[in-house]
Length: 285
Image 1 (tube, one colour):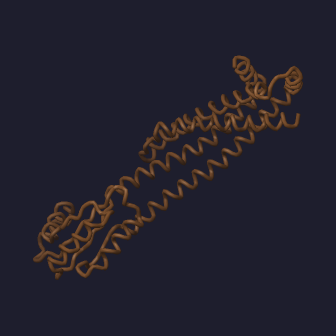
Image 2 (image 1 turned 30 degrees about the horizontal axis):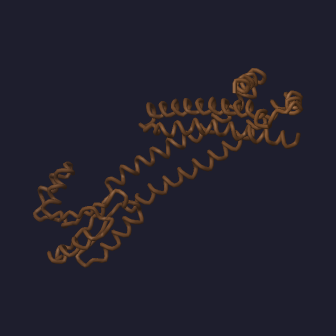
């Protein structure tokens, strides 16, 4: 291992420009993935916040019989996706409107009759707040004769979830493209290093050195290059996150596990590229 590590470090001194380009390409690849990761993670946090407030509101008819309303409540309580059903009377609805819509308090105060309907507020379980589940519950309620209208924010709910899917897909596609370019460049750099040491490798093979013994320095070189690239990508992503947070809008930094995964991904890219390059050379030789 000492010999392999020494040879890997010597390779950086022999071709610092190629090593730098390889590390930079890995950094660029992971930087692009990191930026999309920050965006995707913040979108997910927004969606989680939205999901926490997702509820279905069923506005009741003025002539709805109390027995029908009670039967509807029991029906909703039996649904697996429903966590709680709360009845809001017309008087309570007016009081809430006066409290939360203070700018219209004068309007509410001058009304001779209460125009707001009674309603049922249906809160869903934490793992049952996807758009399909919410829509299914809303459609089931909408067919009840005691219900006049059902609202659940369908105008924005689908768009928010679509945005999350688009961000995740873009992260995978662009990140995969950059990773492929990085592997090609690292592989080219390693092949040049192998070409420069082809006579030494041939002598090592003649004296009985195993392929694994020959591979190790190049694999370590790829590992170190990948770690450097992953670290640079993390720093660049952090700087971009800091600038955006301080100048545009506040973001949430990605979890530490994601950061560690990005650095390890850089190391993996370096090792994979080196392995492919050395394997091809040894097969030809």
